[in-house]
Length: 160
Image (tube, rainbow, N blue to C red; front, top):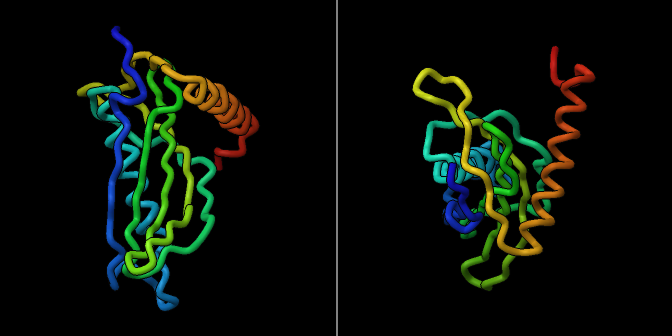
């Protein structure tokens, strides 16, 4: 199977925060942002695997600063690591105040997707071709996160 570079599936999505997207404090609902993150992550996973995918986990979702009504939200996502059937996708979120042009880092998340065949069974994905030292570092860090997820699973922390 021919490998793919990170840039082949890297995707950017931009949203405006409207009144129906915010809570009574005027800040973006976390669930709305989570929806945008999973939507973008799934697009990247589909572009890399060229198949149907399922979300397996959302790991290390950290909110760094609030996003407010009227902000312009930019989500950028790419593949960090590829296993046999799984992919770790990193999503970074920033917001821009459209009046002042101030940009804030809002959120960073790591999601795992599995490619599936027409019967819903896991299927192999193309290998990831790393083109820079930064991509190599992200891949190594993703391997560490994967090992930790597997360790937690083996400890029963995920089962209930």
